[in-house]
Length: 361
Image (cartoon, rainbow, N blue to C red; front, top):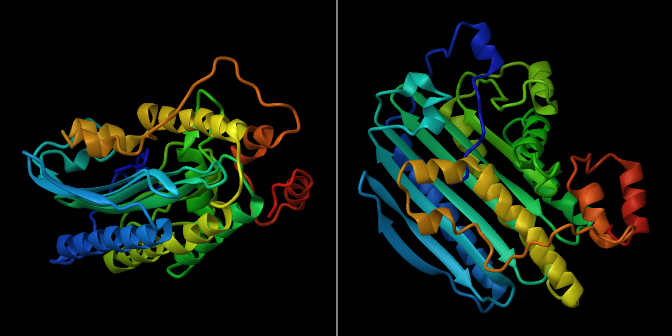
């Protein structure tokens, strides 16, 4: 379950620490569980129909400290070389350091976390890798929603990035139009490989620690774009029901955001050059998930199921010492443009560049 890299919000510091939260409804855990299990079911059904040959194999598992989950993995499909869609519902008495360092008021509380996470690695280099995760957490007086989705193309097209962002933006806007302008740059910030100076791809949305305090941004960069937009917007208190609606709207936006891209690209012809570049760029995905991803850290710190935690890794990948793409090539466009934060909708120069490089539509 990919967790956000989060910190105590500036608004909370100014008020002398975290404020008491509205209590969630009595059936909060059951409703969160039903939503997230339902997302796993609907996404698996949609992807299986899209692939046409691959079938998700399910393994149910139990965690000794409490809870368990359902891991579903597709291998060697027509479109998807490997993909996993996991559901987990876990609980325990001892919170891991990755949570206590951000929410010390939860210390000593029995905790509960449930989530659905997904990573798909398509076979064709022209079809992007994609990730999704939505989750809900409770620990005594502390509770929050988190989640998001991001797209990682290897041979990117501006039209695809725009489509993906447009659908996710519509999901956010259905709850509140102030959300996407914060969650989009937060995604760029979180899925960032510091040692490479690159984003993981073209981003999407990312949010965490969303609770009734209404503080939109609770990330690690108080001087970054997401923090600036959130500060300008101000705190907007939201109820448990509104945040539940956000998770539902964004989770159900996944298939419409991704399936049309796959349908458009999976028949594109490719050769060994494209395949080798895809495997090289997959190395960046591995680096992020093993070095920076908070969900990997949370899962390992809480004795989660290792196979499920690491199912996000691709089946094949390669590294090459000192690799550099040919100047002006489609491969160069990835690191020059599509692994940098962009205004996907309003940048005329970006559109002109992508058209000139055959990377628009």
